[in-house]
Every structure is written in C-alpha cells, then in structure tokens.
Image 1: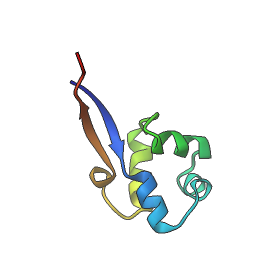
Image 2: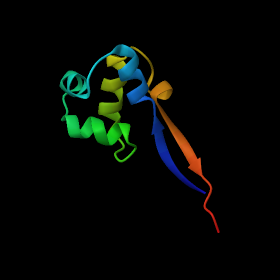
Image 3: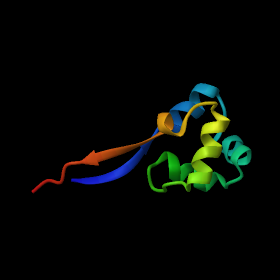
Image 4: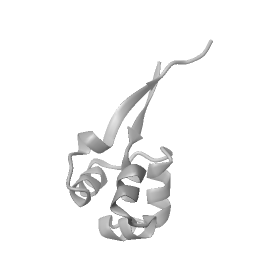
Length: 73
C-alpha cells in the first residue's frame, strides 16, 4: 500500500468564498503553491500546515490526513 497526504484545503477555501490568491497571501505563499496543495501535488511543511489551519480556525488534523492507496497488481 502506498500513502499520500489528502487535504480539505480546496473545500474549506470554497466554503469561505475566497480565491486561491487570497489564501496564498494570507499564509505567505504563492498561488501556485496553493494550487499544488489543493491538487495533492505538494505536501506543505509543518509550519505552512499550521498557518493554513490557523487561517481556517481548525486543526491541522481536520485539514490534512494520511490516505492509503491499494496498489494494483
């Protein structure tokens, strides 16, 4: 089984009604970084994950979770 980090960043951002650019500015990264996080192509540092959680007023664990993929034979 392989694993990756799944996240709720896009869902939370859309619920809050903000753009990727607004989130990026709020947490101090580029819009491209937000796009990569939302797409599951980039795992943020602990510091960035905490900043994102604080921005959404929730815990890191509610945003980022380990997801397991079954490898097909």
